[in-house]
Length: 628
Image 1: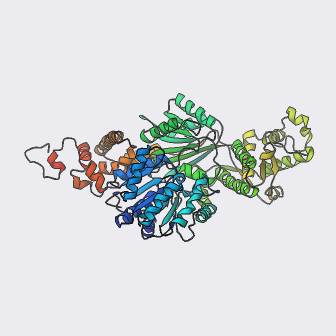
Image 2 (image 1 turned 120 degrees about the horizontal axis):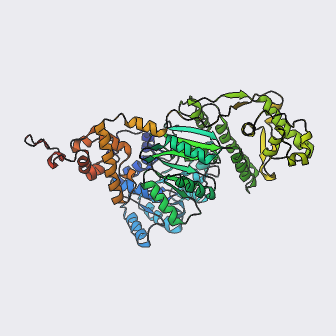
Image 3 (image 1 turned 90 degrees about the vertical axis):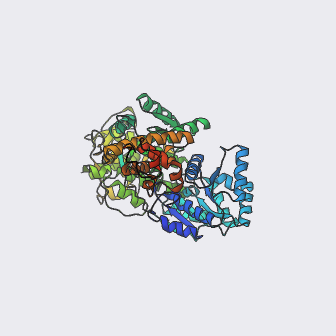
């Protein structure tokens, strides 16, 4: 931990995981994004390799993640490699030769490659010679049909237990509810594994959810208010549901003067790779993407993640928002949603070819996310509660910072439910949200008159409310199970079991009072980060700027993202210490022995460019030379 990675102490359950796996035990590890999952398998891999136990195989679903993690390990002095489609046949053959010689400490491979007969034969050869030390299965939620990113090829990894029973295995993920965890254990044959579940809390992330009106303008206002500075804007990710919307939003952000690129599965592979590389290597770039982008992206300084469409479930929302603020610094998770989002997600579930039981689970997960969006209490309490973790109000979400006003909407809810019932009773069929709201508001549209719904007792009984208020109330009734959207029949509204208690007056309904615009947080992530850096002295801030410029040059030379060289936290610690000699760099976070040897003197030259060469090596200053 100290000599290779430059850290003095473990965080959370890291030490217990490292000791358990290092001793040969199996493990299921749930740890939030940015919580240090990679160290949980990298350190046991190093320890077991040094003990003569051979190579650790890391199952990773993405080429980008393999490249960055291998690059970071090589920078730290660890022998690592990957096998994926980016290598030529000669390069792949060289990696295989190094693997069989026992030269590698860690090898990264995709699940599709791992289960091929050729690769299994390589593993068998290592196993028979006692040179297979560990299997680490990253993004393990991909094995579960209940997870938000199911990948069938992960199911083939059950063969690892059957073929190599004496090799410890660990499955790692940042997101899994109880159902998904059970699926991971079952499909990866981890029944005997120790479970290590960290807190899901990411206290540096501020959660903000707003009602969708003009979502693009709302997004622009959010970025300009909270993520713009004199030198440009922060790095961020904007998620959209469709490829077309990704292209449109990226173009409009660019037209508004922001540095934005699109990313989705419809782009050719070269374009996707080019855009991803730019996002990882450049500062202040916004990636507009479908959920095809993001898994395994280690960029630590993403300051915001925005959703312009509601995700499918809380697991997806948590995983995607968790890509902000991996460095532990202030970040924002912002989402705009509306009734149409709920309708679209319901329709996709209802129209899927899945079994009814599976659809029911998906509806339940969607309802949980909708309840989070409609909540008037602490977002974080709700979010953590979904994963079985209790907490207190956080003071750092929109509802905590600016508690919303609510009104008693019980009577209005009964009117809406009664209208849905009367419409279906009168016509023998159900209608959609827009038609029901027109009846409530007393709008005698051609469709209303055609069906005689202007003669219903509920016609005009809700004229005092506008359409947005009725849609907000409808969303809440859907969230509490009083109304369901029939996606198989044109998204029509029908009463659900939860309607009974509301109609009988046995349950109260409270509604958020609409505001003219989304409440602004007291201070944006950029302002909070600037405030933190303002505690540095003027000399330290100047040093930090110089160190970042130097790091960018080194990263370009090595063709690596800047954070692989040094994280911002390491540069800040150097700037604060103002080191005079190499010994002063010892013990700084993220500065292991190999990096100290590789970059120590260069860092000292940046901190004080006029210092003499003799001083770099710890020699006493020359009293006759004041510059020294």
